Image (cartoon, rainbow, N blue to C red):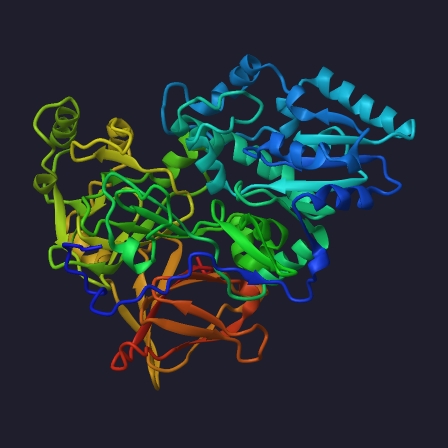
Length: 611
């Protein structure tokens, strides 16, 4: 594809080597650990043996009918009493009324995190009757299958299968009008409203429900790729894979999505030709490390099993996060890496993120979306809007925004906000409350705290979303959260390229690049021509680290003690190093296409544990 931006990365002979489907090999697994397609029913019938109840519990968004067709309508399971949980929920109107306090009324984007248990969605009378049927079937020596979301509430099962689903795949199904929210039939509801309900309600409820099941499931059912045969993986093999993941560096499966401001850089650098059918006009986002939403690939017995990457965190939070981080965040992964591509695209929305007290009070979140922009690439005209110009008055600012939103004169961002030039390897720090916006022709590695939907758009440059409709604007919420002290001088002093040398040795040097003192994430950049020593600090005193290769074609991550196999990473790839890893090194790999390229660089993020 021909581009009209002046990339500092792309050049003659550039070859994409970004791995879009990274996998973790599970040592010691065998082909007997995975059953595919039509053989699944036989495998389950064999496993049941003297047992009486087969329970298949499902994550919301799962195609339960497809599971039923694959498993229940096979001769091996003929004659089983079938109990489907879809018939056991409360009436939809009752569920809707129950959830109203958390869905925020007419707000199209934001709600409040819901603390309800799975059982709250079920009719007590219907659930009690289903439990009676399951138990009486067992007592009579007959067999039953309980299938659907929340199936273990009916019966724990003599054999338990958990059918999991990554959140990203659930979102794609929502966009195709294929699935409904928890306990209701609303597949035709606008996808953005389904997503809102999922984020604040469904996923929270289902995650709490599945956590204890991960440790005892006899099998895991992978239906993520609806075009491929289902795969049934033995529970011990999956748990061994998740445990192994938290003892070595690994990558989650990235996903890419278009947007109204999206660009063309990722299409080339990440090799996205053919990634989607039909091809989108651009790619705006890549979520390269958001374990709540990304999936994890496990290679078990020659087959690849796809599960939510957060399952590794739920089962092994201490090993992955480290004690100091786990003590603060529980089983939440606190660091997010993603890409924002405006190369040959447009400006991001002009926006601000909520202050900590605001996000706690209004949305039930424990901490807010502090972040930063690290420039992987930029054209000569790349810019970043950051902070306010001196003397900006809130009334004039609000009036200009509201006038523009009402169809009057467009908002003149340059009259109110700083627009700084942005070049490759610049780092802009964006603590909550700072107005900001990545400009056209920049390629941003966004490093932030995990809450990832709490963006108050103040101005969207008068454009429409990809659906041809205006995107939600949140002027009132945004005005409540702007830090008016973030002016030009404070941005230049504290938020732009606040680089401090830390250490150096033969072949490498280390710099601190942020983040701001109000943010809990620490970032370090290493420039190197030889192996660089790193150390997570171990489980008891250290913490998880997230890295990206921001310069150089490839590098090798190695264990000085041979604790894990060498792990190759490529330019722009993000990888996670669990706290349990301890010491490791990163060394450059030569580039056959560019033998003069010697210096590589990584950006590493971790949680400040000394706060």
